[in-house]
Amino acid sequence: MPLAVGTKDPRRRGQGGPTSVACASMTPLDAEIPAFESTLSRLLALFESAPEAVVGVQPRPGDWSVKQIACHLIDSASNNHQRFTRLQRTARLSFPAYEPEPWVAVEKPEGLAWAQLFGLLKHYNAFVLHLVRNLEPTCLGHVWVVDGQDKTLEFLVRDYYRHLDWHITHLQTRLREVGGG
Image 1 (cartoon, rainbow, N blue to C red):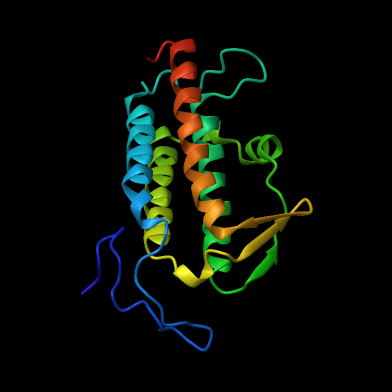
Image 2 (image 1 turned 180 degrees about the vertical axis):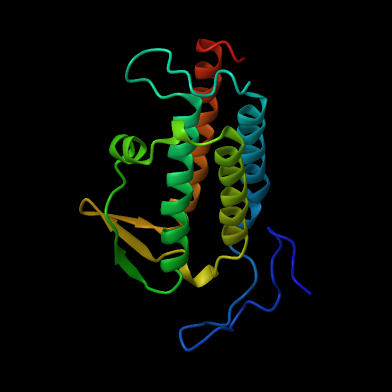
């Protein structure tokens, strides 16, 4: 029977191939999961409250629309999905840095229906939270090397949710600017 997204799979520890490690089921991040869930819920509620008539509006040239902010956060989920997964398989990796402005420009989110974009954001973040709930504790010290700096998996997870939290304020401001909040 499949588990609901976001639940811990009791079968996951020590299974799945030659690089798997049997270990305890708790991680130092487990106590923070409710805060991560709260951050994600608050962010998604803000996006969901945005009137469709304003989601593509840029208040000033160069400022992102609500759609562009959502697109950026999908990029963030995508990049962190890769980091969180790969760093459980390898102790030290080098990934390219993310470049928000060029990525959003190439992706052209203004051409997508709001329901599609919001749905992807919502479901991708549910999946990322599922990954976080099921992290292997022995992998939290694994490192992503970026711009000559080491960032542990544990740091990356916390930083991802700090990033989402920052965008709550950003989105509140943007919605007020475009008449949606």
